[in-house]
Amino acid sequence: MDFYDFIRMDQEQREAAVWEQGTFIAVRISCGCSIVLYAMDKFFAEVVYLPDMNQVMLVRGFKSKSCLEPYLEMVDLSEIMI
Image (cartoon, rainbow, N blue to C red):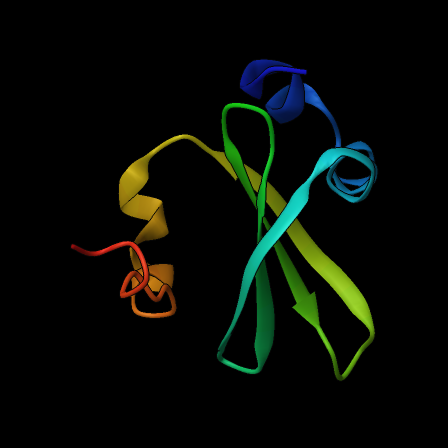
């Protein structure tokens, strides 16, 4: 599946695609929501989950590297730095 196939899907189909094909990368908390980052084939997906309601609110895909900025401080590169 490519990025454009993903964004043409409805919310429920995107959610299923992430669970079936996504690779978990990180989770962050913002405004009481858990925002989970997944790697898809050549793009990323975020799942916005409301723990208090036990509900997925949004599943979105993106290709822009700028959308990864909130996760950068969570990544430890010390093992690969020379």
